[in-house]
Length: 345
Image (cartoon, rainbow, N blue to C red; front, side):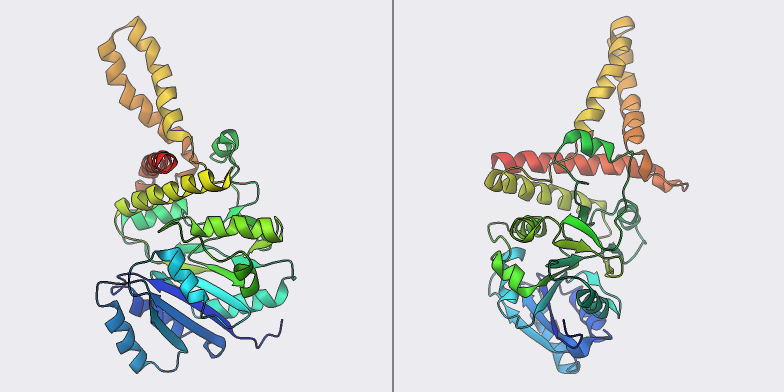
């Protein structure tokens, strides 16, 4: 690759009036913005997003920015495809309106494309929390829900999924991954077009996982790579309910994907059901040998201890982190409910 080649960035927004200007300010300060072409797709926003974007464009003409509207809400995958249809460069990057890339983000992506071989068709990197000023933002900083999955690290085997609690793995630069991170993913444009882009049957959630599956099938299991230098920050919602919403909706999409495309590497984790069964088994002798009342009293305490034990690797030394295992259990429960709904919807 010629290091002077341009690169396109597709950003999709929906009712993003509170976020979009901050992202555009980050893009304006990119050290490689002389090679950057930004395509901003408004997915039928009902707020002031289009007005704010046009106002920003009139004041910041140094950024090569195209603004297009879908006219109505067509969903994130379809909006990404709309942006992709306007890409003319050899490489394309995707991020979200609630992300905050540092000034060298695009430069690092360009440099990484300059180093990888032709067999690599997609890149991804770490996503960290932009702020830690709320419980949810500190929680996602520890649990990293928006993270690439290494090959073999997110197998559909429930035994292997369970083992991940006790054998955490860290990706290294150059590792192959089975799934990209939607907020931080880059492609060879021809490869993304070869697999017909993103799955428009999905409105929200897991389109990054599905396109990763299609790319690995088309170009090989090790064609998607992870690099630690391609890092950006994500402005996660302050409320924990947003983590539950994301887990639920992504699980629905994952289940639908399994129904349509066969076995998937995104089965839900078994810990909510496992925790309940273990707790019942522990409390059963109390119930049989003592009384039902004592068994019922003991059950919530035992369940809390079991949940804590299964997620022990999430705990640090600060007091608040003692709550993270229970938050993770609830998040996985939302994931399980979403997956069941997706299977039967």
